[in-house]
Amino acid sequence: MSLLTDTQGTPERVWSAVCVTAAEGGKISRDDLWAWLNPDFIQNGQPRQVIGDAHRQTVGAASSLGLLTLEAGHYVLDGLVSTDYAAFADDVHDRLCASGREDPNFLMLETYAWLGLAADIRGTEWAAASDFADQVEAALGDPKAAEGARRFNSTKQAQWRRWMRLLGLAVELPTRLSFHPSIADRLRVELERAELPVGSPLPATEVMTAIGRRMPYLDRGTLRADIAARCGLANDPARVSRLMSNALRDLHDEGVIELVSRGDATGYVDLSPDPFHPVQSVLTITLSGSQDD
Image 1 (cartoon, rainbow, N blue to C red):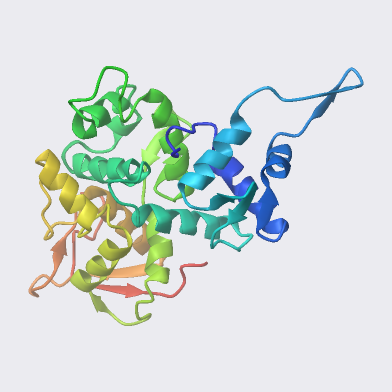
Image 2: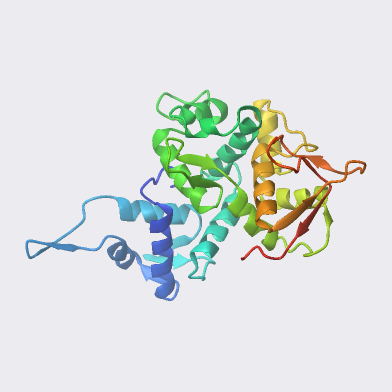
């Protein structure tokens, strides 16, 4: 079981399974949960069953995250009690960040960490290319694996994209570049959850370190550093990654944060170049406290 192998266990379906179980007091029989997820329908006046495996894969995906545990024929909800979809996304993000290499879901953020490193070299448009799955497999796959035992393929790619959008790490565009990696939404959330002081200038390095702890697949994060070393990719902590630079500028323009740079000061960090934006380096970052606006 994993998010990438249970491909019919979409974020929306997993959320439905969580809500149904929560509504039953956090515990529901297997048969009842499956009936909720795969209800009969009426055709020509006769009840019919939906043929397929979506309900099983939905429960499999939820179980792989540790959201549901099977105990004596009943599924028990673990931890999440909120009925808010945004809180669900935060909970999934936390669980994925806490996963280790032995966890099948580790590949979710492992892939994103690699994407962020590669984007520093090649930009982001190629992330929507038809050969993206092949590139991920070449970088992160097991060269000793038998043919057909790929860690990442085009089917898993579609599911991976769905979950990245849920986490606020990508957006869907109405163009041929339908998948666009963007961390602004997740960064906005994690800056608030980090409980950093609001309204006072903070050293950029301090804020970046805090972000790295909460988003380990990005700048100053342990997962990003691990992937960089494993794949031989540059990871300079003195320069902010392309994905992070774009997000910081977006939040600055929205008034969520204020980026300040002084040319004669020390302790600043360089953003990835953007000739169309006035901020090219950052000394301090001020959180406005308006992340929820």
